[in-house]
Length: 353
View 1 (spheres, rainbow, N blue to C red):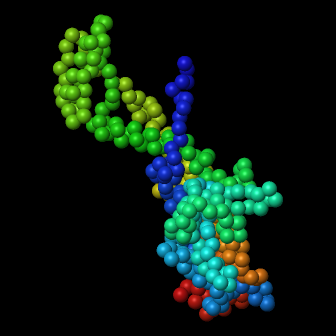
View 2 (view 1 turned 180 degrees about the vertical axis):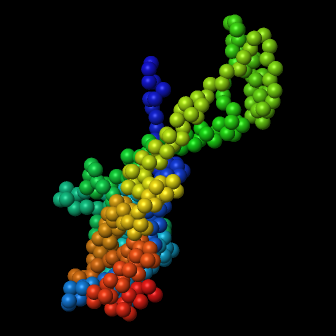
View 3 (view 1 turned 90 degrees about the vertical axis):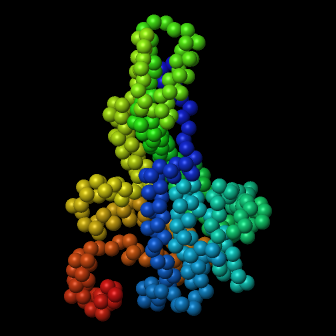
């Protein structure tokens, strides 16, 4: 029936969806840009101004080295990747005798199950994870898990990945590229059919099909075929132009970027040139505001609350590694700051190393 060929279309699994370059690019760009930011432990002074916490603070250790096999960059990178791909990141706490968190172990989100007791208490069921020291299935209270999640569309304990919205586009992009690969593996020659001017028996049709595939398929593509008895070869593949192949592939990239909130200039050189009228500072500000800010703020809050920091303490990511102005604009801004008296000359010099 009309439209039947469109039924039962399955979306690729997250692992396979990552094979689509736009998804891979969005996930790795976001994760690596956040992971490269320095983690600061700050404390509010008597004057209300936040400054770095003392180096002797016991809360520094887990921020500098989250666990025995990851540095802070790989830890944050995995945290963000898990959140983007599965909608949730779970970090299991390990405490010392004082009750202070000394290690954080990121868990496989597919092997963690949130549980809600009748009294409203929240627990998490964890499966075996030898890196985290979990020998079998256990249930732990929410106080021992840091749970960071994407937007919770249906349940307050379950975040939803952007892949929910762009999975079909990513699958479509994979199919387009897969079909193109097969086409070019076939020496850029389309599939087709042999036609005869009159009716032929099934036996003859089968013999012709077998002979054609053996003599002109696979490694024999490109050989010269000599046809008789009015036989003719008709290609069946739709031309790339007719299928609007490039336009469709471009649309899938745009749709994936839209769901991850990544500006197109981060993925496409052509779009980047079109955005060339904006300064580097303005472009980075757009990227930060639209894409990274919510993820960074959530990460800071999850760590600050999850580590049970004392009053006045907070975890903050240093945005200087991201929101960098061009040299001329930076010097001009600091020149004005020194001139107007709210920055000392040596402070401006120190900030430029």
